[in-house]
Image (tube, rainbow, N blue to C red; front, side, top):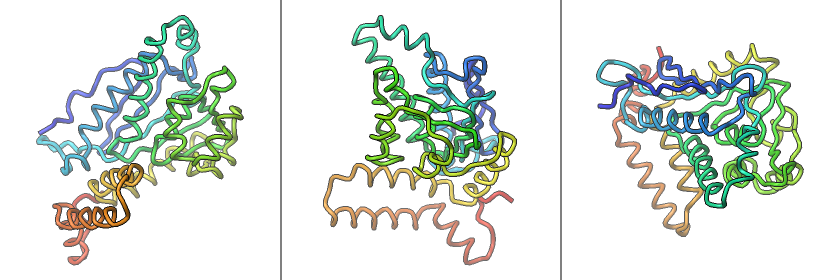
Length: 285
């Protein structure tokens, strides 16, 4: 059985485990939490470690020592800003790199965003200040985003003569074709009201002090859902995103998926608890 002990040791990213929630904080406040190679590598390590300890993926609520497996992840940024995008030194170095070196850097970034997009836990972004470039990519990869009124989000790469290609698939899926195209061409910062309107964020709060309350409310809501159901909802969506068969095959796939869920340990617990008028074993008491 996988243990919840010994989380990864990192310097630029903090990981705090509180019950079934992992709190991840970008911690380069003096650099507005800009993404450098070390931070990207640490985030990838944390995403991998937490994914392997997802209650939904493991179909288990706790390890052998009684420590809860993870059901939700919260990603936030220390200080005034969530994430100002790529570190200026990393971008400067990219200009002197070979095509192969730049491709390897892009591959590292793709691993970062895909690890968050496909993470088996329910992921919540708690953001304030700016979320630019790669910071906007992190936001787009989360399942739910709470932002302060002063937030500004931008696919800012165009201002530097490049494009948001690596983050593009994830932003595209969140916003849709026309909106992604416009924001990539425009490359300017949008405010919280427009971000809410186009679907970049789900909730606006007055200031940073209110972020915690909004995040806690969403965690409570998600923890009333079966962990495996939440994880498999993401898997089901990914299947729909990439479905290449015909409609008949899709209908048969959904029938099999539903049958599997109803017969699963979690499905049986959920149905039994409903009939017996008691809380299911995964619900926070």
